[in-house]
View (cartoon, helix red, strand yellow):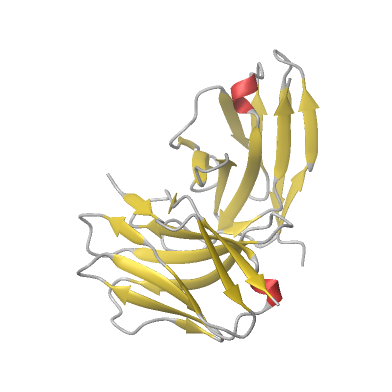
Length: 113
Length: 113
């Protein structure tokens, strides 16, 4: 069975600093996709970044980047120059050749001024 | 652009009452999904519809039914609400199955007394 684990229930970072959120997953599949979603207090789920497993290059979206280690089944999210608006729950998610997006339990990130 | 629209945003029911949650997307997506989000558990898939006219069970389908009314609309019905169904419900859609990013609605907070 596919599983996604986020071992950090809560994280905090000071504004303008860098923070890394961890995610590991378990699968026997070779071709799959990984996502990070952000859920601010408004509750909306917002796609932050996507990584395709067959691509070795780590995905980057402005201040957000991932460290994808396929052999280690690790998919961490780095947020650079943290902003107050980054305060949110962050969910790591995994999908392969089905419709079932599997989510981790989330990491609550608080950005302090 | 509206994206994915869910109604209602909040609802309180008594045990045994029935209710239908509505979802509509205007992105011409083929696939649609219903999730529930409970504290500390991330999002779990209830049902999904890979294309118009098809529906399939997800991880936690018991106590729910769905209808893919047309390509735009995908409703979730609770026939006899139970307190265990108190949760936040999210509808999502994606262009196609599998690896396409899912776009989420703002959620419905449902309380069953």
